[in-house]
Image 1 (cartoon, rainbow, N blue to C red):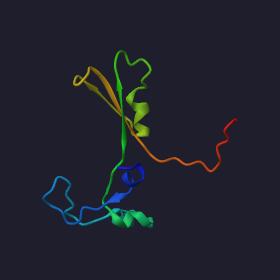
Image 2: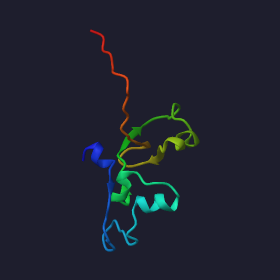
Image 3: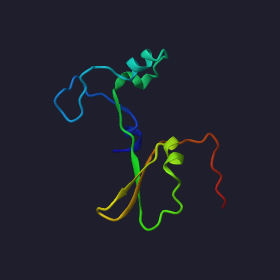
Length: 107
């Protein structure tokens, strides 16, 4: 799945038997209305957003890893693991970033 399609909204229409269930039939547009704001165009199309995550496996001592309280504002989660290796796993959400300025490459 490409990153742009992964960041789109998904809608599981009236599904109450699968692993991903939508039993209320609401979308992000309904949430926006409840919050008193106008929904953006893609919020009307779904009730789930898939966010691609980068998994970073860290072995040895994690002396350079910031504490979780500093990672939480960026939605980065860490877990200690023992399988398939012993260490720490960090999950970092990926987003598309664009820059208005053109990139100048040196010859």
